[in-house]
Structures are given as C-alpha cells and as structure tokens.
Image (cartoon, rainbow, N blue to C red; front, side, top):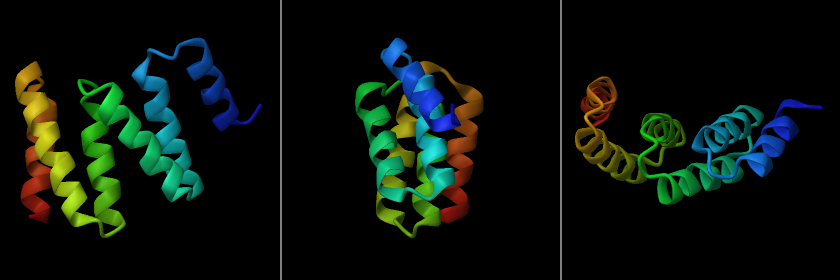
Length: 102
C-alpha cells in the first residue's frame, strides 16, 4: 500500500485525529498536488483549529506558492491559537516566520 493510501485509511479509522490529516496535507504537497494539499490544510484549520502544527506548515507552503496574503492570515490565526494554548515554542516559530516574510 502506498503512503497516501495508508494515510487515507488511517483517516477512515480515526477521523477525529488531526495528525492524519496533517500527514495527508504534507504528502499531497510532496506529490505536487497543490489544490488537494491546500484543501486539506484548510480542512485542518476549520475542523481542528487547535492543531497548532498546521499553521506553520500551511503558511510556509503558501509563501512558497506566492500566496502571501493568505499566508499572513494563517500566521496571524496560528499566533492567536498558539498564544491561547500556551504553545510557546510554536508561538516563537510562527512569529519568526512572520517577521522573516512580512
């Protein structure tokens, strides 16, 4: 079974686990499936807003694609979520990515 199919199977078994969706978004990115990757990242932001790892990876990918306005929006939201959850390491990384690009 290929990696993407394995991850999709994990999502079917554990649809409430954001990590599996995160892995799928990264796998789709790796495969060059921009639209599906962005769609999966967006699903994470909407359905699992407290899964902080999403924000850095998603914003970084959007920056790679030249979608700066959306990347800034994702970073701002991620910073808010990281502050609210007390995730100091993630907060530092998100602020650093923001400062480096805006």
